[in-house]
Image (cartoon, rainbow over all chains, first blue to last red; front, side, top):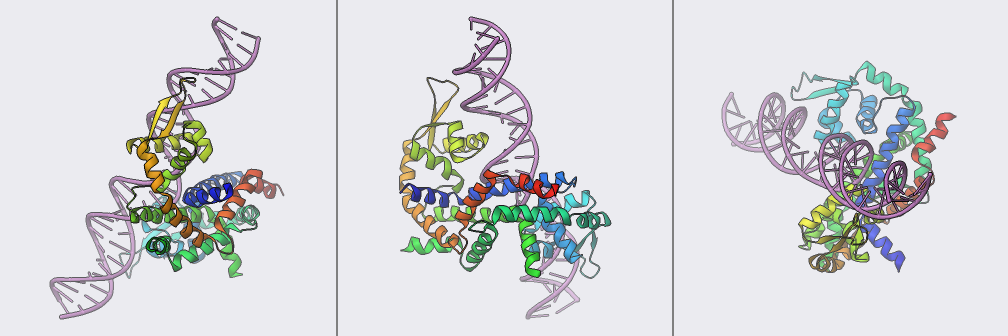
Length: 160
Length: 160
DNA sequence: GGAATATATGTAGTTAGCTACATATATTTG
DNA sequence: CAAATATATGTAGCTAACTACATATATTCC
């Protein structure tokens, strides 16, 4: 009975719990980079990693690739430009487009990060690889949301 | 190979993914309350639900109960007071303490919410109850973090 | 080939938590 | 019992994403 109540309340507060877990992991992530003497923020990862893998991209494709709204990407790019980790140039064919790529400094940084990532991946795997694997759970939830949104699912029960 | 790369990158971006999932669920949550014609924000849930269950509490115990930093609770209480859903009074024994409780309006609102919660719980269960259950995964991850933090786990690998 | 539409980028302001610091009152202890 | 410490509350400002809106350039279509 009590157990059910805890579960119910947990489900109702799920967004809050996700957010707090995210915060916590991010903060420790920052400290891990620091422990390696690397000046790197976890939030930079999706943008930089994508540019590392795909070399040159414009703002919108980059945003789509990492799944961000474009203003979020723009503000990250602004920071990264200030850090001289990336640079931009105009696309000569389609002048609306801003092409973004890593600088030499950026490439150098990213290539020194492989050992750090290794550690982070191992530590994260250790933490998340419990009976219900968090990464897999997120993937599964994202898949079920893609199929039918939270709201749509709720509507079925409302109409009953 | 490619699969491993996706996993690695996923683990490295885990905080971002958690945050975005949280946002998405919260936004739909708000719409579900709206669909019931109820003026209620998902972020209010932990505070109001706790007051509903425990009647009167001071700020710090309430924060501890829901696992928030006290300034977060204070700012929620401020909103809820403006909505006239809660009220506060001084503790006569320990005058430092501010005792918080639901108003009649608050109690009335909460008691009309049971059917909404039912729907939310069902829809959430539908979404999260995949092979790797998200709620359980969060609980497990929080338990493993409590035992040994992300940073501490990383340090073991750094020292190697 | 010009008008209507679509796409790319950018800016401003919001959100929901947080930490760091400040202050007031209680409690403990020499 | 006064000084030192601990606890409760409060304020200010940060963060990392978002939406809504604005503008510039491309593309499409009559």
